[in-house]
Amino acid sequence: MSSRREILKAGAAAGTLTVGGVSVAQATQGVSKTEIVLGTLQDLSGPIAVLGKPIQNGMIMRVEQANAAGGINGRKLKLVVEDTGYDPKKAVLGAQKLLSNDKAFAMIGSLGTVVSLATMPMVLEKNVLHLLPITAHHGNYDPFHKLKFALTTPYPDSTRAGLKEMLKKGYKRVGILYQDDEYGLEVLRGAETGLKEANLALIEKTSYKRGATDFSSQMQKLRAGNLDLIILGTIVRETIGAMATARQLGYTGDFFGSQAAYMPAVARAGGRAVEGLYAMSEVATPYRDDPKNNKLLNDWMDAYKARFNEDADLWSVTGYLIVDIFAKAAEKAGPNLTVDSYVKAMETLSYPRSYLGSPDYSWGPNKRLGNNQARIAQIQNGRWNNVSDFLR
Image (cartoon, rainbow, N blue to C red; front, side, top):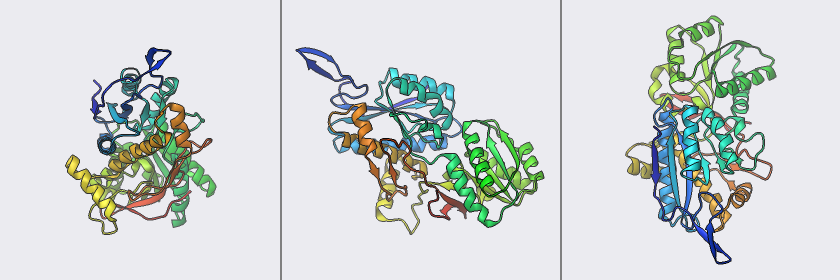
């Protein structure tokens, strides 16, 4: 059964207007005189719930702040969250509910490639905005559709750029472990492109099914290839499990992961097995005791902890940023908020680097990808540290 959380409901469920003395329903789904309905699909119970729960909290925090300040042009935000369990079939059911029952104005920040790709067609068919999904799959902005706006550098591009930089260390024998779905295939494509540009071959490749917990056969195959670098198209549990297995088998080379391996939980829970892992990063993982923090970041992290009684992490920041971007575009769209007015606002929106460690984001009339840069980070002493500037 899908779980649902409604945040800060405003008054009426639907607005009306009068034409020729006759009251008719408001034309824009999810927008009433007092409210804007946002739908999001998160994993709150499945293999990447460690992402979904802080994402949800970050979104809630920004929604509450917006509403406490009077809303967006006088309208309160209402966030409705559906739990997908990181299962595309469950995601489809959740999306149907958000679109038909909750009448969402926008589907925003939905988590996961398999979730986004499975639900996007029905969102667009309903003439509903598909905004800033938390996945780096190119299908979130390509082919062009006026209602699709993406946030994150595609996996092939970031993997290629990062691998190009990594190969400067002198790696010659490179292999890959990847999840057997669209996410993993995107990482594989980036790896193959990056190696081809360096006139190197992919020595060995092997895959696993989503949700796998045993990587013995895959890591034995990779270790037999005498590799000095293994690329990981993995997420949280798979990153930790694969690296721990490889170390137990005696592999002493390096690992390089996509953005999906750049997880606070990997550094926190992986221990010695993941020490030294490189991965691609866009928004930085914050640490409250980092002396390099500015006051704005520390104040934000303190407010988050006071609200949710837990420390903020990368995904808390991501959820917060996504709603903040939505709010700025909706404010810019003006009091007459429609799908078209919102699209025009997004096409001229510039969201500069912030104290939260995000890159510059911008979109345009022919541009639906907000950012095409990422940097390399490494786990050092149990924490993620950036070891390069932004790369293209």
